[in-house]
Image (tube, rainbow, N blue to C red):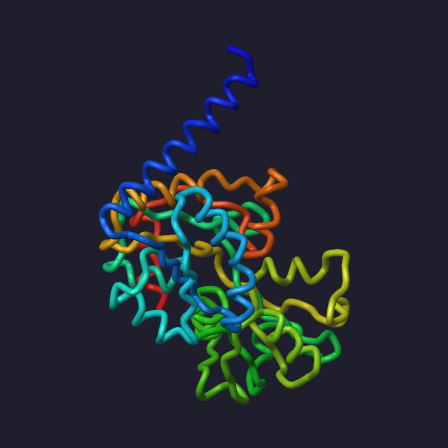
Length: 287
């Protein structure tokens, strides 16, 4: 059998499996897939970012994929707890808190755009601020990411405490932002003395291309520990065959394939790998 024949056969089998899955689920009343996305930025921006992924999964399964993008973190928690989603993609800390609602047999670890399974939070300041280390943040005003974010709040709050800095008693004030771009801009414009972002966002800021701010005017004064990136999970009420089908589809995404690159680039993910509940046990101590 030639390579061409093998490719044609593989494509035919994939189409057959997708059609079979769609037929089986339709017979059982499953007409669409509800995919919940953690709202780390504005719902409209998230919706635009994930259109490509929704289209890919729809093509792979033969079912309509509905993006469920809650307005805030509290609404996301309610959606998952009320079984209003079939799948969810979220910060690893959020997954840890909601783990009891998910099927432990169908978990995927998202990779960063650099292909890593872990990331770090970093504290950025303006170079002309005079701030050189974490100790210098005493009495300063800091903006974090979402209060449920593992990298943009949880680990950095602990890091500050390890250096004797209490959020309420030793800082000049603090608040919570959402997307890294907004946090970077606020520090750049001197609205805050320091901001907390993901390390990959810091690296991205230095890549060639149009940027809203001059990265050379900013610096990192501290970084948190390496922790898991986002987690894709199937709800424990989701049909097992559907969960398996979605898992297979996501594992096919390859950043080196042109047709997949734009999908992954849009959602700021480098791909997915299989993972297990045990890989997140350590997160329960990071509160």
